[in-house]
Image (cartoon, rainbow, N blue to C red):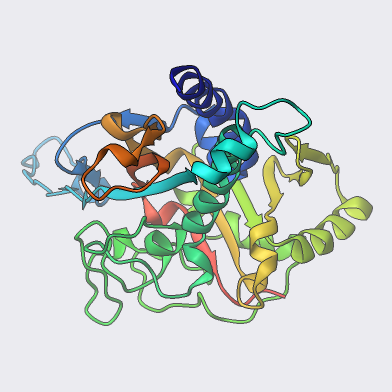
Length: 340
């Protein structure tokens, strides 16, 4: 079994980038930017800048005293680690029929097949977590579930232990961007307003909102939508603008660039009538997938369980991860829920 253990662990290591990160467009971009990080610690936290301080600048004359002023502009959002595991098991019948026998007897190299399937399902798991498992209810801070784009960008919900409220004017700097325009204070939500998907509207949601206000480079923006919406905007782009189509890796996810912003078709969003109306505008510079260094998709060997008291004649391995998806500046990104 030692050779089998070694081979299956190698399949996980070799498959991690190719099959998981590079087939999940959002994670692929984070990986390219080196924002899939492997660290430890009790919590995930860092200082966040809450506001600008341009009001402290003073214009003065020679005989005018120089004003003294100080602003508190730092807070520390705190995120908890989320834990996940994927069990892989086969029993003695499967072992004798599918592992180690001659080709006319062995139907399938079962252990290798289980590992490859685990890699594929890990990609699907990550994709579901990124898009909140197609739910409009954001994952809360204190739950066991990995947090999502929706957790960060949904208006008026606590995120990173920091509460957000329109009515109370609480922590507007920590809200997702509002599509209605650039606002010093986000006082209402147009997140659920019905909008038509056009190139003009996409430009408005980027150029006339907080997205552009916090944008350092046009290449930082990635716009995510379902294939139906992507086909619509691609058809308009083909006839009106410089249109550069492309593919996201091997499985055929399509992307194109408009105004140097990458527009990406996400197959997962096509699976639900709810998510087909979703659109995300993400400033990729502000997102991070944090994986705990002690559980970075750690894969245990296949271990026979029959040597335990009252054990069973099967082999069990687990793939384990601890991490979370985090946005350090929600005002730089946007989630729209009613696009057609």
